[in-house]
Length: 98
Image (cartoon, rainbow, N blue to C red; front, side, top):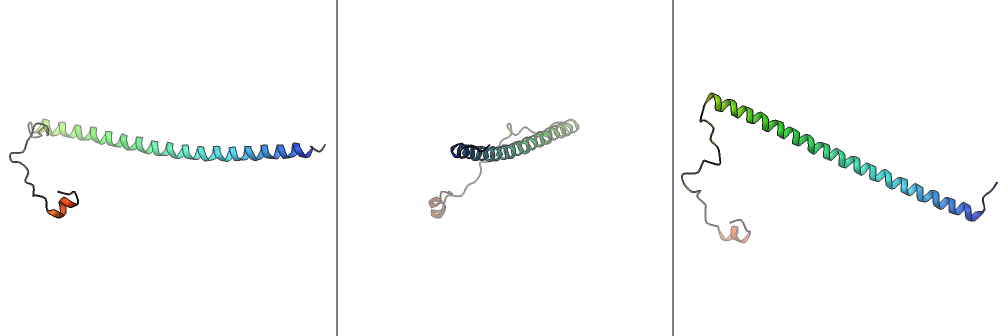
């Protein structure tokens, strides 16, 4: 049984809308997959940095126990003389470098 022309056209429009929606969903899924891969890479990097930090802390504790007082807390140390700076030149001042 043949569908009337207006029903066929409506059905074809519906099919086209569904195809466009399907393509849009595929695009969004790919974008989400990409974001998830980026997120996983960032988390992996953070985990690596945390592991490195823990290893350095452990190494610092070993050094401190072997040589007490050899590692100073940077927050308690200070420079004995102020840092020398050169006065800005006209060129560096013009470019905001001085």
